[in-house]
Image (cartoon, rainbow, N blue to C red; front, side):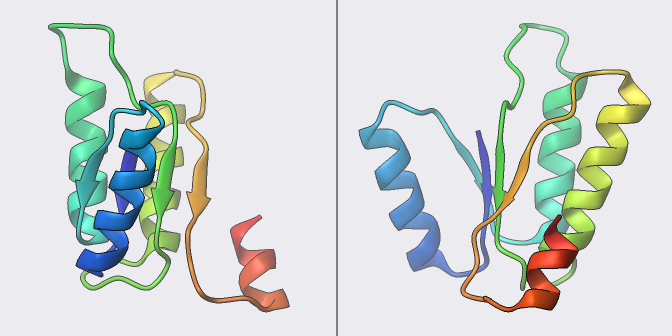
Length: 102
């Protein structure tokens, strides 16, 4: 699982919850790193361990979670692999954000 958030406290909390529930996760602190890490994971030739889910904050520096998610979904389609769910982890809660996430 890949998680991305620019707030170190949020990353630590997510990692702790996921690790406690026996999920392996990698973390990025901005959208550019999130996309780069996802690409590197897709390009691995040494093993068959791929990210199954991406959790992303929507408001991050360099690239927001909306753009990072779009790029990840595009990569899945270009590679011809099953689309990896990109789930928003955010404090934003309004109809326009919800619609954009769908």
